Length: 281
Image (cartoon, rainbow, N blue to C red; front, side):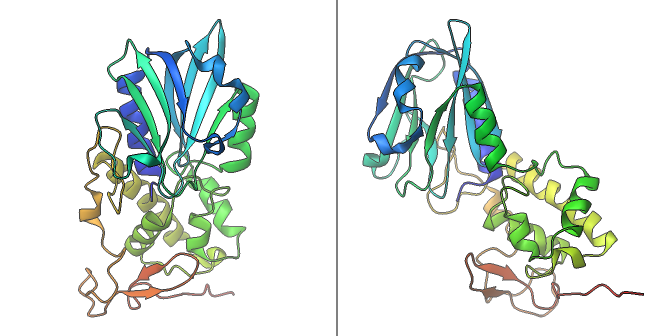
């Protein structure tokens, strides 16, 4: 569930409350939750947290010790959360990693992930560079219109699949892809290289608007998602199409929202979001 807005909210809360804290100890509940770098765990004890940022759907925490910087990359996956100690979690046995802190506003950062699609990585700078280069394309909040036009024009596949392709655009998942395309009035199966110039400009603008608004509202609390401090995201109240199959289209066009079943369900209005082909000549 956590996508770019939820990861951004988590990164911002962590940045506000744990930067400057000293790592007193690290607890690992199960070794396989650390994808790489487990042997370097001892280095992180007594290191200081110096920064937190988001890349794609991952949260990157930077640490400094003896003049060297290393990183903890937390993949949120489908069910992963970063939580403060006071935040209750359902099924606490799924807390697989804890950083015990001192000197900050929070005594702990917990990594909770029941389905374990996400993992943690303990990395040096070279490892972080490799981690990000192989996983993430441009950030949609920083991607220029020119870059976006070039990406769509060079891709023949489905538009929704492209928006969710993390190596093409980093951070958008199923919820926000559906919401973005509905607002842009583009069908999820529209060929990416068959989107007209004005529609591409509209899509680029709406992509940024939806993600920024979702961040401002704390993300979308769907299923088990909540922020590190336990607050629920309120953007689900602004969902116009996601999980609304059979409901009337909010554009008052008279059609009902449909759901197509694939690798990830697509929700769309068959009247407002029709597949269109560019005319040649």
